[in-house]
Image (tube, rainbow, N blue to C red):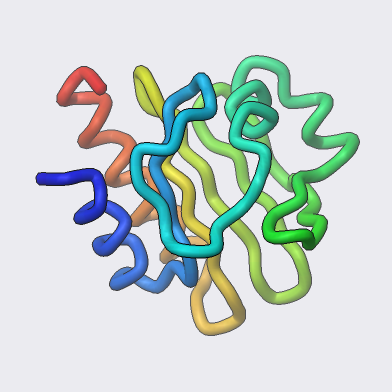
Length: 121
């Protein structure tokens, strides 16, 4: 499966935009127009206090970080938000709007992240 097919799976599951990135900030595949500081997000898995304090700008909009641990980071802006899950070497990211629930997107994002971890990626 190509990296693009994971992005397609996430957008089909309800993400407005989605992406897969290396922990070093490199883009593996992403929806067109998705822009955010990947390195800052990836660093939030190891040290979440900075992200909690500053939030995360995605496509120019500030999202508040509601939950961050070593495996999953979740943020919110209005009725939308994002879910990011860490793999062994990367990050699976999903952005959602008011048409989806955080639980629905979390299940999709973490499901792909778990699969990639089992594949040693």
